[in-house]
Length: 212
Image (cartoon, rainbow, N blue to C red; front, side, top):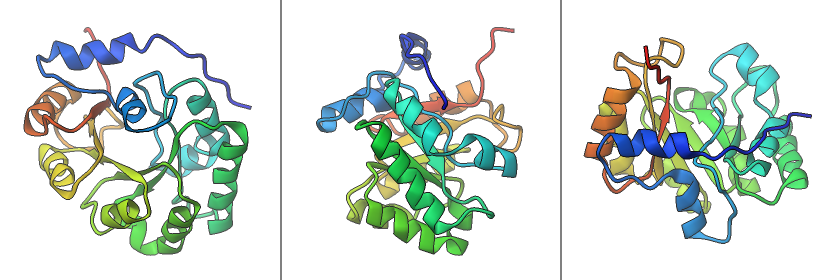
């Protein structure tokens, strides 16, 4: 069973603040919105962008471990060799393991092939739905109607702006350090630009930060 040890979360806060913008982190913002108990401004990757990542690493056990440790645990729902029932089972695994918030993630361009899974997730009412790549609509609106908060991951400034205009509850700015296939801008300039463009929306950073 995966285990995650809580940390201070300070580095995540300082990265955002060092850019000179005021930003409320997703984790603490959740706490302000309701009786949830997230303490660390950290979430795991849910999208499952390739076969091994989504099959081996992204499941209900990992999501539960991250949420139990105080972050936002998520798992991906678009693996081609998993079923809709598997997605339902992972949601139940998380709920049996923790009462803290969690999310279920989708690669937006593939949702037209997995709409039954999206419907099943909305029926299960997870606290968060995570959308990555592409236009978040109409999926974002449907998730909101089902009562979920929606986090959108953007690989470009335009995608961040589109998610913000569509009503995303939080945005993940993903730099091209995240596998080299996620846009053309590095994390820090993308994050800085996204914070300026979407100042009222909680922001998380994905990609990589290095000191040389």
